[in-house]
Length: 156
Image 1: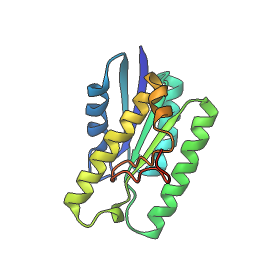
Image 2: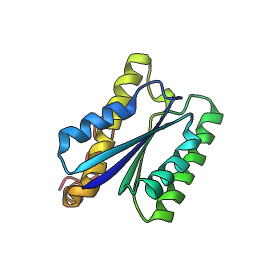
Image 3: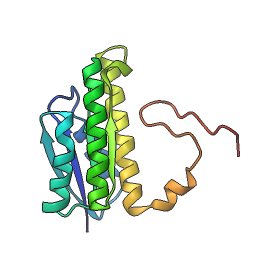
Image 4: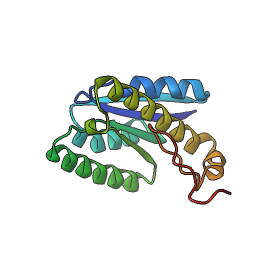
């Protein structure tokens, strides 16, 4: 039985963990989800590390929604570096899924983007654990999470 950690924040304006959980449950079986919710995006790395150490998760999905301000972008960058460090320390993947508030025109679009991106990153996490060949087959195809896929630079 695999263990998947999901860490989200109270700062986010959408319950991205719920969307990710539903996507994982629809993808298959053979895993248990361990969820943690932290206040803000810079709290994600420690929470992921705690799940690796105390819950023995095999992979973490880190979900966050930085605001529009330049400060929020800086915080997201710092959090991203922390997530990279935590993953390297454990030699286990952390799938980072951030949705910046400025990516959407309004609240409705923001909600749809956050849900879709969380679902698609959750499926990537599932594939990392259970179907890594599926990811290999998609290499170089220009897949995008949350938006329409870009497609390959040169058709195969």
